Image 1 (tube, rainbow, N blue to C red):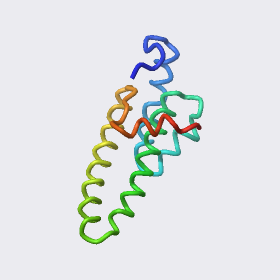
Image 2 (cartoon, helix red, strand yellow):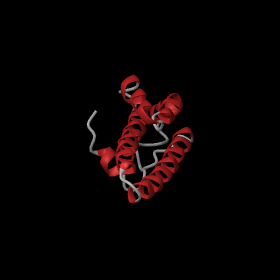
Image 3 (cartoon, one colour):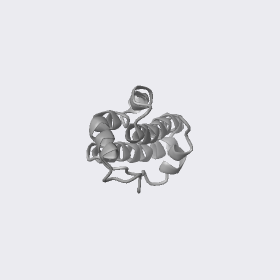
Length: 113
């Protein structure tokens, strides 16, 4: 994703200072940490919003998993997908990248915080 000028010293500083907080944003309800602690950081906010979408996905997946048989199967598939997206998000944020999650990043962009 082309975010600002990546060679801009301010952008680099924002990324370097907020990598860890951005990564924490992909761990369930901890998505609120970058959104509340670093509201002025574009990098932390970007990853925090995506983490929030994943957190909502976990809640939806929980309710799908309650449905007997088909829900268990879909819940398992959803759980695997959410774990993979969380791991990728953590790795990409620690690498200092603005990584957009497939399909879900469009919802994250609509969040105004």
